[in-house]
Image (cartoon, rainbow, N blue to C red; front, side):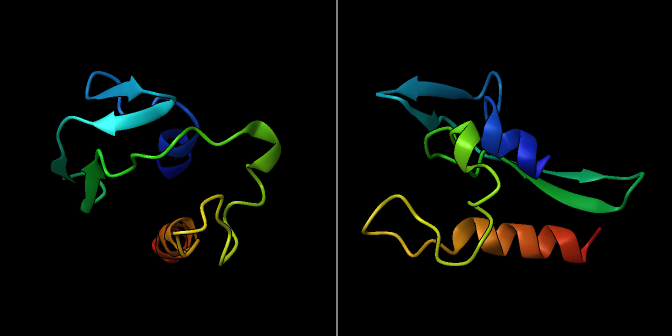
Length: 84
């Protein structure tokens, strides 16, 4: 779900586009009984990642904005990988 959220319409029916950015209109927290996992819908509010950059964005310190740290996607990937 992480990759789908980052590379497509983050949350169909929940997000709207404003000036090339996805803007959240609400957040949801859910629990999947089959996998016993918690998931968050609606946490990503940045622009869609260009195809040429998709393999590089997962590294630590990668950012396209000077006022950001570039650790958000790295942390998400690290946590997702740790939990299978």
